[in-house]
Length: 377
Image (tube, rainbow, N blue to C red; front, side):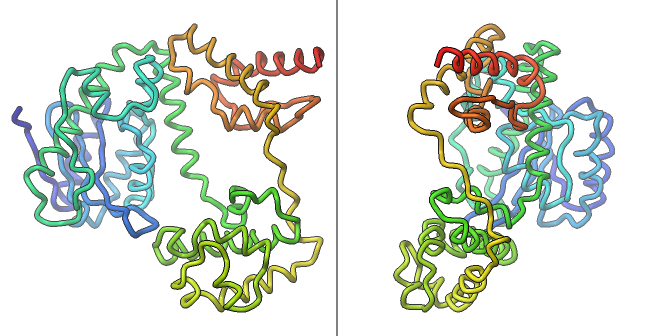
């Protein structure tokens, strides 16, 4: 089908269109970006649609994003995206703002039990009975001019996104619509929480096996890597590979030869940052005991899996009752966090990550299940 495409190539045009969009109930928004050798995504194209036309914004030509930022933050205009975590990073990087309210069509599909984590093409096929052409997602979105195929792909994507939104929202109850927006707000909130480099070590693989003194070294290594990745705008593994961090913290090499023998250590890292790493290791190893991190909790033992299964069943039953995909009812990480508050004998506390409607609907049932397990043990 022929798509009505409008290009936005300067600040004045963007400001005018944003003023028009501010009066709409919703806008569908999509982004195309490159992120091959960088920490941050580089925007190649932004697409907007109200369901009738496709507007293509060239971010390489725009300098003033203030009007677009105001649109993203206008509470009266719903921003519609699909599987939007990386799109959100693009917005934050370009405009220093994030969409609110946010309606993610992938989440909405799960709330309607159409499928969990549905890809965009499959969702369009399911909802609109339209088969999208094979994507251009791997192509170079920073090249100019963009190819005709890229342009039509980008325009078609965002136009259908608006149509999918209209179709899904018609099927959602007011309650489920509110839940989709609640989960969207949660996505935005999570991205707003700037990762503290000094806390990154907690997520490192096998960190729980290290002593508190070794954790002091791991904490500094992870913090340095996070800061350098941002400053250099490089992927974290380009700075130093993930699998090298734990053996460095455990063995604490004190010369370049020993450092080079560390698992998965790239020769380029030794050449570029070897001396810096040795100093960092030495200084961190000298951290006074009073300033060592607390020991990290061990993973749940294998025998906890039966209890996890019972907790997950509560979410599955509630999902069946509400006709919602079971996978979005209770996240595995949330259930593990719950168990870790009191395993094996309790008492247990609901973790902060169990929020909103999930906490209201299932919080007490989870605690009751754990309490009954404790009584029968």
